[in-house]
Amino acid sequence: MKSVRQLILIALFTALIAVLAQIAVPLPFSPVPVTGQLVAVLLAGTLLGGKGAFLAVLAYLLLGAAGAPVFSMGRGGLFILLGPTGGYLWGFLPAAFVSGSLQKGSPGLPRTAAAMALGLGCTYLPGTLQLSLLMGYSAGQAFLAGVVPFIPVDLIKVALATALGTQIKRSLFKSGLLQPLFENDNLLKPAMKQARTK
Image (cartoon, rainbow, N blue to C red; front, side):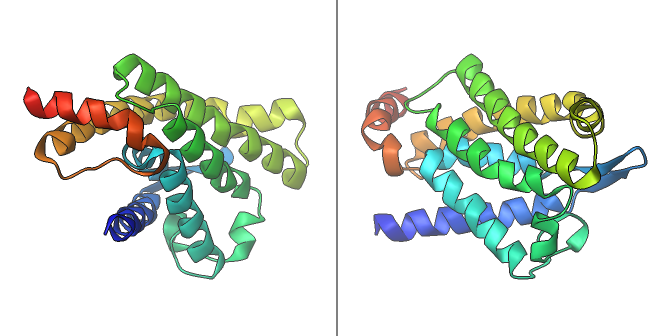
């Protein structure tokens, strides 16, 4: 039963990442668009833990690589992952795992925000590297084209995901609808008991 619940939640977050990917705004000065899926990736880390979030992102990337139109602007295909902006998609894997793993137990807002900010950094590193290699940019040019323009919007995404994630997690624990997943099991049980007694 627990494994079925895990699979359902992973599938739901895979779908949410695909839906939010369609919120995409191309930028005239950068090959990298502003997209919404980062919010779903970070939320997955909060609610599924590191392993569950990693699997949700992996399923999303596999769907896209197989040709399903789940990437930004309804695109799909392996060429997206291997193209100039594909590094940011690969970066969602460590972002989900790192962010989720650092939120073991019942972290408060500061720790949740810090974990998500570190997850954001995990998307920038492979994204900038692949952009630089395939576009022929220097490290500085890749940083200016693939990181700097996105920092303000991405920090807003982190703040939004932090606020939503902590509130949803607390509410679901109180109602008993969210049970511990994967590596968070033993650490979250005391937090669940405390939430239900309030």
